[in-house]
Length: 68
Image 1 (spheres, rainbow, N blue to C red):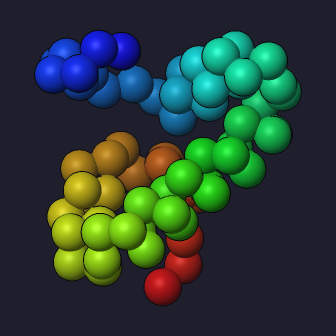
Image 2: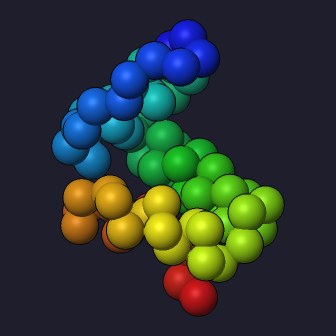
């Protein structure tokens, strides 16, 4: 995706499928990678900004988010 491109809503399954396809891995490994990215994002931006961003995600994404 190029910088500045508009985002779009997608299901958790679609999100994980895209990760798996791009990385050449299975869906389970994709979920582990996504969890690591969300954890790193939280550390990088801090709790307040992180929660502001993740509140915009569909509820089924909660399985990928680090527990406080």
